[in-house]
Each structure stands twice: as C-alpha cells, then as structure tokens.
Image (tube, rainbow, N blue to C red; front, top):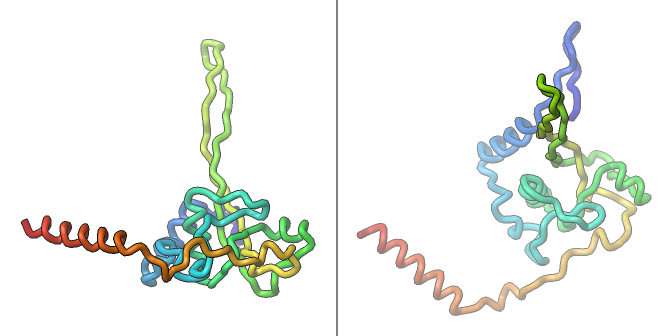
Length: 181
C-alpha cells in the first residue's frame, strides 16, 4: 500500500485496498464501462481467451482476473503477461516512459498464537490484503520475445456450430414464453 502525503502535523493515511478496488469498479460503472464482462471483445479477439498471467506464466486468480481483463480491454493489450517493475528489471527490460501500472491485490491470512488466561494457547487467523502495481508486457520494452506473441486462435470465429445457435434461439423463445404465462 502506498502512503499519501500527510497534511502538516498528521500521520500518513494508508489507502484501503478494498476501497481502491471498489472505487475502480464504481468508476467504470458510472462511465458505462463494463469492460470486465467481455475480455474477448478487444485484444484477445484474434487469440484464445486466457487468464492474465504473471511473469512466470502462473495465472492470476480472483478479482485480479477481472481487474486485469478490464485494463487489457481498456488499453487494447494483447499480451496476457503482467509483471512488476522489479520483475521486468530482473528480465533485463524496462517500463516505457509514461506508462502507469495497474492494481492487483494479494490476500492471505497470518496465524497468531495467543496465550489464554488458563495457560492454553489459541491460534487466531488474521486476514490481510495488500496491493501492488503490475504492467502488461505491451508496456515494457526489452522482454524476451515470447512475452509479446499473441495467443494462437483456438477456433476460427467463422466456423460456428449451427445447432448451438439454434439451441440458444430456442431457449430464448422458451424464456420469453415463460414470462408471458
């Protein structure tokens, strides 16, 4: 978490990660952006739909998927790879001038053992969340080539299955009829 500069005589205010994620979702909703709903509409249109990947190929999970899909759609990134400034530097690369990172969060628990009044010990799990910034490979120069390759298409978009379209049309008609009854 980043500390904001305090006013004179006050302590730094730590930004609440939960509030930061919520604010981003609300901001997108107010602007009519529902970019996290369809990551295949931009960027991944020509390739397979995949979870956003860390620099080592491990996929992100949870809210990070939605946050990074939304950022990819908004900016038009085609690479599924995301990494921190330090990870890019360790790979001999650098962030392009003027690029801004995107928030991801890490949530976990720590276990604290406390001694009770009767002398016994009790474990207590304490949840925590921290946030940090990552950059898409498209924002970074000097990475190994595989970070920039567009994912291969899984299915030719033109080769649709006719009976699947018919099934969806039939289900839509049934749904409409059931609301009328």
